Amino acid sequence: MAVATTTTPKSSNGQDQQQQENKHSILHNLAYSILHNLACSILILLLLLLVAGCLVIWLQVHPKRLHYTIEDAVVHDFAISSAIDPKRNRTEERLRATFLVNFSAHNENRKVVIHYESINMRVEYDDQVLAYGPVEPFVLAGRSNHSFCSSIAAADVTLLPSVGTGLKKIKEPSDTVKMNVTLLSWAGVVVPHWRTERRRLTVVCRDVTAHFPSNTTSSVKSDCYVDL
Ligand SMILES: *[C@@H]1O[C@H](CO)[C@@H](O)[C@H](O)[C@H]1NC(C)=O
Ligand SMILES: *[C@@H]1O[C@H](CO)[C@@H](O)[C@H](O)[C@H]1NC(C)=O
Ligand SMILES: *[C@@H]1O[C@H](CO)[C@@H](O)[C@H](O)[C@H]1NC(C)=O
Ligand SMILES: *[C@@H]1O[C@H](CO)[C@@H](O)[C@H](O)[C@H]1NC(C)=O
Ligand SMILES: *[C@@H]1O[C@H](CO)[C@@H](O)[C@H](O)[C@H]1NC(C)=O
Image (cartoon, rainbow, N blue to C red; front, side, top):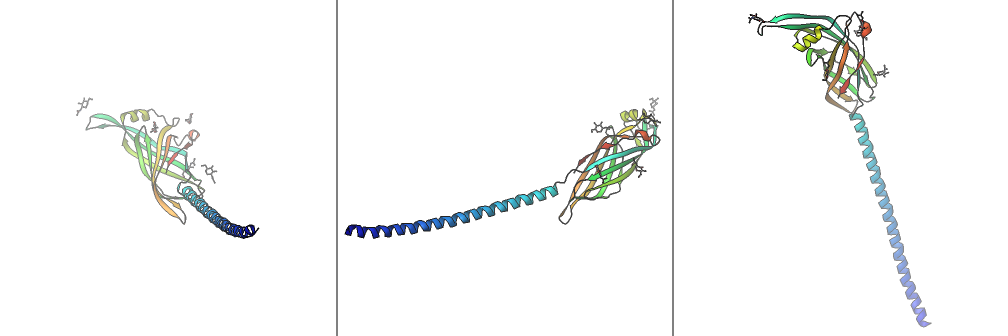
């Protein structure tokens, strides 16, 4: 019994110590796991914020495509003349014409504004440039449409033989003229209160059907490809 009485407090002492140690380590583990969870939560929150921030920036920097269409294209004062080139001693065709093109631009982006600095329009027929000239710059506001019209002239442009042959076949006013129209521009792509980026902006309208002014029934719309 004496042995038993002496051993029980000893063992209870040992158990107390053990229990205290256990408590201590449980508390320690608890505190550790709370801290760990907190750290993980904060880290995850930071990551989410970072991803959200990147998404917002990405959405603003990569605007939705702009849509351009040609509503109408008309060829005024169309005339082809033949002349002899004294240097080469052969006949050449020369073109005089004025190209009037009505565009419509549509900006779907609410947060992106396009400030044009300069725009030039180019008219091509079978890869020969017939006319090139400036267009009045404008501001394309967010979520808006803008219609504009450009008129450029070909003044006695010497035609490549194949182009001359093609254009001479065109009969006014029943025929139409198929041409490629390109807008080449410099623009500020502006996200208000945030940033402005200067970009080259190209609008390509392939195989546009242009008609003569006396025949408005042959007017055809065409879609353009925008490269921002
Ligand atoms: C130009 O070519 C024609 C024939 O195509 C020829 O009769 C004429 O002599 C040539 N003139 C000159 C200046 O070479
Ligand atoms: C094209 O623009 C001209 C000049 O602004 C205008 O007179 C004409 O009616 C327009 N045509 C179309 C189809 O919008
Ligand atoms: C327009 O451009 C395309 C591609 O460059 C070409 O295949 C087509 O023949 C051109 N059309 C005209 C009318 O020049
Ligand atoms: C702007 O143009 C687009 C097509 O380019 C059209 O769907 C939209 O209805 C137009 N919006 C206005 C306000 O004219
Ligand atoms: C107008 O153009 C259409 C299509 O190109 C053609 O069928 C029609 O004969 C033209 N009208 C006149 C009066 O030339």
